[in-house]
Each structure stands twice: as structure tokens, then as C-alpha cells.
Amino acid sequence: MALQDDSFWMRVAIDVAAEANTPFGAVLVDEEGQHVAGFNSTKLDGATAHAEMNVVRKMDQLDYDNAEDLILYTTVEPCPMCMGAVIWAGIGSVKYGLSIDEVTEFTKQIKLPSTELAKRSWRSILITGGVEKEKCFELWK
Amino acid sequence: MALQDDSFWMRVAIDVAAEANTPFGAVLVDEEGQHVAGFNSTKLDGATAHAEMNVVRKMDQLDYDNAEDLILYTTVEPCPMCMGAVIWAGIGSVKYGLSIDEVTEFTKQIKLPSTELAKRSWRSILITGGVEKEKCFELWK
Image 1 (cartoon, each protein chain N blue to C red):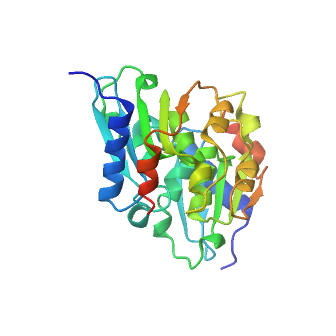
Image 2: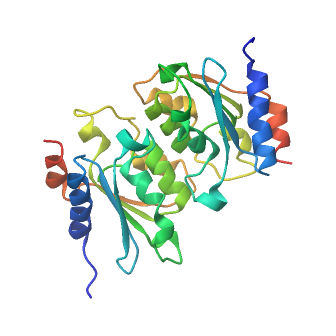
């Protein structure tokens, strides 16, 4: 089976978000394409239950030798809480749709880019923005 | 009953940490002195299970009208993940023992002070360091 591309995985994150009626969805994928998905469940589970936190907390369900091989797809750039979790968990790549700046018109944000937080850490994390950006934007309408 | 002071609550956090054989303990206290406590359980529960995250996730066990009235005591300054959780949860005060800088000699840290992250947010959070600092330091020995 050919491995799926970024667009495919971001659409999984978008679908998970849309089904839960929230603009925040995330998927954590290993090298074999196994994955765990989650959405923002803060209304039910409290302030820490962002989509990315929910998937990082399920990462032990994946089969990997090195967490650096995992890729986190998320509809919105991880906030410092979620990016902190990515750093501590040792996840190697983050690919997001909309940036923190781009969603500030819709919702309050902690205005610290994920790249800036990564630079303050001991990890080298590959961060890519703008994946399926228009479709992520539609989740806010 | 007279309300307890900072030293009292930090010692509760220190005791919780010491019993779990970790240098990281935290207590979240409401205005009546009700509290939830936690310690770093990352070995068991994964990368996100820092002491502060564990107590913020239990905050619904407390009885409060406004989260701004809650005080988080923690043996070490909250990392950006945990400080992000504090911001999202709307907790009004953080009092810590050792700073992120002060524990860098013992363990890897994301080098972003809690005050700096708070400034990037829409919250006004009262942050105080150095509470029972020597006793918090002893947890690392």
C-alpha cells in the first residue's frame, strides 16, 4: 500500500473536527500509516483537552521505535500547551493548516508561534504550515 | 479556620512530590482551602503527565465561582505546556519554588519563562517564584 500524503492526512483531521462540530482536529501518524485521531473536547473534558493534547495522550496506541518518526497533523497550529506536549513527547514533525495568527480573528490565542517554542527546546522539529489551509478555514464558517 | 499561607501549600506540593519520588509536585487551591494535588507521572501516563497538568485536569473537583481565584503551587516553574494549560484554564495565580533556569542543570527544559508566555496571552496572571525554594531544591538530591 502506498503511503498517503499530507493532503490525505489533513483531510482525516478535518473530517474528525467537522464530525465533532469544532474547527480543531488532529491526527498522529506513524511510518506504517497507523494513526490516532482526536478533536477539541474542552467543553466536556476541561481546558486541557485540545485536539493535539488528546492525540498525544493516545500515542502509546501506535507502534513506533522512535517518536521522531511520528507526524502530527492538525487543523490549527499547536498552541504553546500543545506544542510543549509535542516537544516533551519527542514527536518529530508537525504539519498544520491555519496559523495561530490566522485564527486570532475567530478566537483568543496565546500568541507564540510553534517554531519559536521549538527553538527554545533541545529538539529539532520539522514544522510545516498551510496544509489544506482553505479546507481548514471552512471549519470556522 | 485560618487560611493557610504559601509556605504551607508549597510544603503540601513538596510532600506529594517526595512520596512519589519525583521532584515535581503541584497543588491547586481554592479560596476555602479545598485542593487537588498531583505529581509528575510521565513514566506511567506519558509525556503530558506533568504535575501541573495532572492537577489542572482535576480542577473540576474544586468548588469555585471564578477560576481566577484559584492558586497553583508547584515545586518547579511551569513549563510552556503547563503554563499554557494554566492560561486556558483561567487560573489566576501561580506560585513556584525553583525557576526553569534553576533546574536546567538537572534536566532538559523548554527555556521559556512562565511570565513570558503569560504576556503573550489575554490573561493577567499573578506569578511568584522562590516559594520554599531550598526545600524544592532538596527534592533533586
